[in-house]
Length: 296
Ligand SMILES: Nc1ncnc2c1ncn2[C@@H]1O[C@H](COP(=O)(O)OP(=O)(O)OP(=O)(O)O)[C@@H](O)[C@H]1O
Picture 1 (spheres, rainbow, N blue to C red):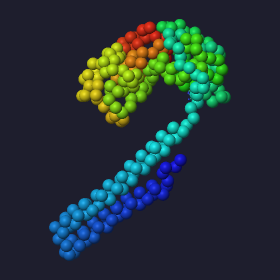
Picture 2 (picture 1 turned 90 degrees about the horizontal axis):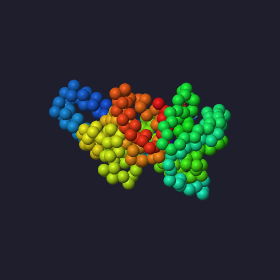
Picture 3 (picture 1 turned 180 degrees about the horizontal axis):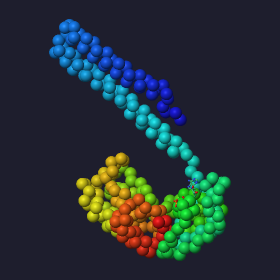
Picture 4 (picture 1 turned 120 degrees about the vertical axis):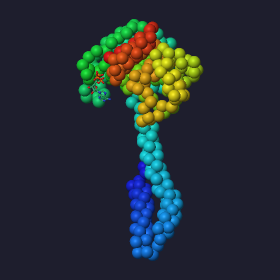
C-alpha cells in the first residue's frame, strides 16, 4: 500500500522553496529602499518584525508537512512488517509445552537457510537438565544457528529438536519462548523506564521482583545511582546505559523470566575485561539449576 507518493513530497518542497524565495525577495526590496532613502532604518526593522510574524506560521506548516511524511513512511514500513508471512507457523492442534525441567535433544538435525547450502548436517546432541554446554567452533560453523533452532526461530529441515521429550514443532511458540531465556550479544532496549525494560520479561512481575532480578544480575546498585533510579527513561540515541549495563539488564530479564533453559550468545563479547568479570557474577548465578548453552 503506497501511503506517500512523489507528488505529496514535491508539493511540500514547493511550499518550502516559495517561502524561502519570498523571504529573500522581501529583504532585498527593503534593503534597496533604505539605500535610496525611500525608507528609514526604523521602517526596515518594523517590516522585518511583521515579516517574521507573517512567515513563522507558514514555516511551521511546511515543517509539519515534513513530519507528517516521516510518520507516513514509518507507518508504511510497519504495515509491511505486519503483512510479512512468518516462516514458522504453529500446527492447528499445537499444545503448550508441559512443565519443562530442561532436558534438550537434537536428533539427526539438518538445517539450511536457503534450501541450497546445509549449515547443519546430521547433528546429534543430548543434554540433561542443569548441564552447561559450551558451543565452540569456527566462525560460521553454525553455533548461533543451533540456538535459533532451539528457540524455534526456524524449523529444522530434517530431524527434530525436543525439549523434555516434546518435539518443538508440536507445541505452541509462546510456551517455547517462556521456557527459554536468551542473553544475546546486542540486547534490545525499548523507549521507557529501566523498570519496564526489565519487567517486559514477565509483565505480571511486581517492582520487588524486578529489584531482586536486578540484584541477582549485579546491576541494582548501578540503577539506583541513575538520576531517577528505576524510573530513568531509556531513549533511542540518548545513550544513558553502557554496553555492560545493557548486558546486565538482559541478564536481569532472564532472572525475572526464570526459564529452565538459558541461551547465551556471545553475551560478554562487547564489554571490557573488568565489566566482563562483573557480568560473570550475574551469569554464574543464572546458570544455577538451568540447562545452559553458551557461545563465548
Ligand atoms: N539469516 C541467515 N540467512 C542465511 N544464511 C545465514 C543466516 N544466518 C546465518 N547464516 C549463515 O549460516 C552459517 C552459520 O551461521 P551462524 O551465525 O550460525 O555461525 P556461527 O558459528 O554462530 O558464527 P560466528 O561465530 O561468526 O557468529 C554462516 O555461513 C552464515 O553466513
